[in-house]
Image 1 (cartoon, rainbow, N blue to C red):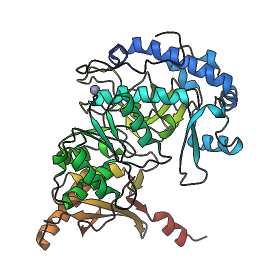
Image 2 (image 1 turned 120 degrees about the horizontal axis):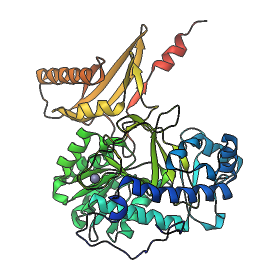
Image 3 (image 1 turned 45 degrees about the vertical axis):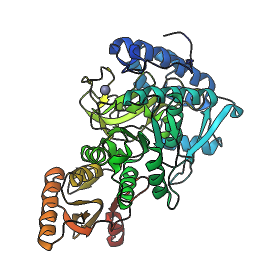
Image 4 (image 1 turned 180 degrees about the horizontal axis):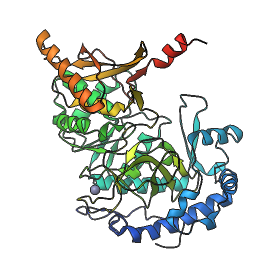
Amino acid sequence: MTATWPPRYDPTWLPPRDAEHWAPDLECAKPTDREAVILAKLTAQVRYAWERSPFYRRRWEAAGVSPTTLKTLADLHRFPVVQKADLRAAQAAHPPFGDYLCIEPAEVARIHGTSGTTGRPTVFGVGRADWERIGEAHARILWGAGLRPGDTVLIASFFSLYLGSWGALKGCERLRATAFPFGAGLSGQTLMAVQWARELAPTAFYGTPSYALHFAETARREGIDPRAFGIRTLFFSGEPGAGIPATKRLIETTFGGACIDMGSMAEMTPWMTNAECRHRTGMHLWQDLVYTEVCHPETWRPVPYGEEGTPVYTHLERTSQPMIRLVSGDLARWTDEPCPCGRTYPRLPHGLQGRIDDMFIVRGENIYPSAIEDTLRAIDGFGGEFRVIVSRREAMDELLVRAEHAADVGDVAARARLAQTMKERLRARLGVTPIVELLPEGTLPRSEFKARRIVDDRDLYQKGTQHA
Ligand SMILES: [Zn+2]
């Protein structure tokens, strides 16, 4: 590790084609050796934010910490966490970028943002040098996923303020792959993407898992077996599906390629620093690029390996809007068990298992939408889409699962057996007996982006029936 911070990377360098790793000295290092590198980067990052950002200086002074607090990596937990609401408030008070922008506004190379489903959107200002480092990080991680120069990557996701598509594009370009940034979201665009893919024969695909499945259904309607495209690698972000075993298997059998789960948060871009390698053992945490602690959601201290918590992310080479201990709100278990790739990073063996706030409680059981999806996708005869409605009748929670049956589940008796199987497997997995209603395949709208499948009606019901 040189003393230079932020690091400067040679934009022309590439590993030998048959190399497994882009930076083996970091990726396969003894964790304690790598921690020294991380601590040096973290110290420089924290000092930089302290000097340049009133946002961090104010919060850290209030918590009684400063750059000198950081003597080991374990001291990081003493720094207060940042919630997305804190960022929105800082941008409301100091528009448009908030008082955590640490460069001159004229140095911002790209403006992105989140649409802000509730209240104010969040604005991202990404500096020029940061954008190049994002490309470097993404190329390194895509290399680990198995991409190589000469791959043609179909990027089938929105090109808008959404950072996912642009980050994938930047990484592909740095890796010297052939980018095919097709986009998504326009009327008729999926059919066009299928037609173009037939001509251009992409070897890799980026999008969301639900969109990949929609793309495959569209191809089949055109008489094309999705395996015929010759796509070897599919990498995903924006939804947890690629980390859900049954969805992963479905994508892999549908396309005949490897399904690689990736993604942290747009604020954190390089968002691929949660990413599986080509062995697909769960997402590695690429700790020397973004330092991730899986924390208890009340104490904000890291939980031991093997336990569940929420990822808290810290940039290590960011000059524009550095995030230092940004809370994700996702749910994950982490482990330090080895991976066949030889990387010594910790891993999230089950990926991001949902949102801490997506979890809903039915009759005392914690239920994650991803568990329902995983269970249904593993059942033969499931038609591909579902919705969940949680309601309350006479003070009892009720879990209604509306699931599609495949077109070939023809007769009434077969459908009754299918509904019974779904009910039994869901009960075994969730600990709650659901009501299962079957619908013909294709009834429910497919999502081109993040699938929203849960409706919780209990709040309405409670408000409507409360008595003084
Ligand atoms: Zn690995």
